[in-house]
Length: 125
Image (tube, rainbow, N blue to C red; front, side, top):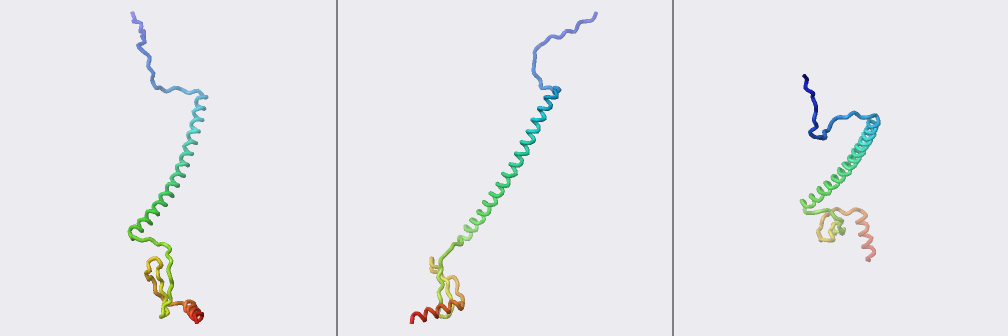
């Protein structure tokens, strides 16, 4: 005599198992996939733009850093300074800083500088 094989339920649990999709479910998943692909493309484009902006910003900052580093290293920077041009008796022109009184250049006078000296001398008499 054969024994009857009966099953007794102990408990129910949930497991993550593969399930066949209907045609509508496949179509809906395809639409979601297309949207995600579009979103990825948009984000990659945005990432490229942000990367380009960051690179430009970093280049600007690095240029400023180099310029300020040079100023600190040399302990000087170029500025617009008023200077006076003085014609000396020996027909030389002396360039003198107005802020410090320092003579920075001595050079031979140009013709027009010598001419203006003659004109000024003529007006004085």
